[in-house]
Every structure is written in C-alpha cells, then in structure tokens.
Image 1 (cartoon, rainbow, N blue to C red):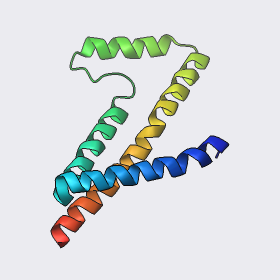
Image 2 (image 1 turned 90 degrees about the horizontal axis):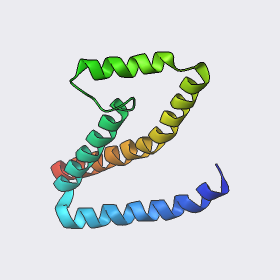
Image 3 (image 1 turned 90 degrees about the vertical axis):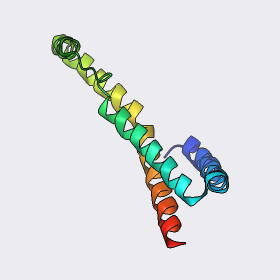
Amino acid sequence: MTKWDYVAFPILAALLLGVTYSALRLVGFFGLGVLGLVIGFIAVRMELERDGAGSSDPTTLAAQFEARERMSRAERAGLQAEQAFRLKPLFVARIVATGFVILGFGLHFLL
C-alpha cells in the first residue's frame, strides 16, 4: 500500500458508511438489497465487456479480434495492463454490492 492508500482508506470508509446509512434511511433494508443488486449487475456487466462493448453484430467482433491479432506483443501487453488497471475499482464495487445485498435482504427478512 502507498501513502495515498493510508490516507484515502479512512476517508472512503467513512464515506461508504455515510452512504450506507443514508440509503438505509431513504429506502429501507429491501431497497438497500436492491441497490446492491443493481451495483453488482453493473460491475459484472462492465467486467464482461472489458474487451469492448458487447455487440450483436458478428462483423464488429471479428474486426476487434483481427485488430488484436495484428498487434505486437508489447501492444497486447499494454492493452492487458490498461484493462487490468481499469478493472481494479470493479472489485471494490462487487464487495460493496455484496455487502449491500447481504445487509439489506438479510435484515429485511430477519426483521
């Protein structure tokens, strides 16, 4: 972890707690679970479409694969590193979504 992570983590944790509390007060436990499902769906969809937007047109997909095949090894490695960098925040989004779903639906059906 870097120095920035040690500074940002408490701030982001407090922000997450504030958002969770305000969402809970606004929509209740069931709404918090639904919000978690929405966040999780968006995060998974973005991860599935990391190579490009999902298209029903097969010629577009074929053109994307042909363009990747023409890339050099360095360009492919750069593309993969860029994709990995862009997907790091999605891990946090999936964790938050899982917490919202467990907290929201769990407490809704418990209470």
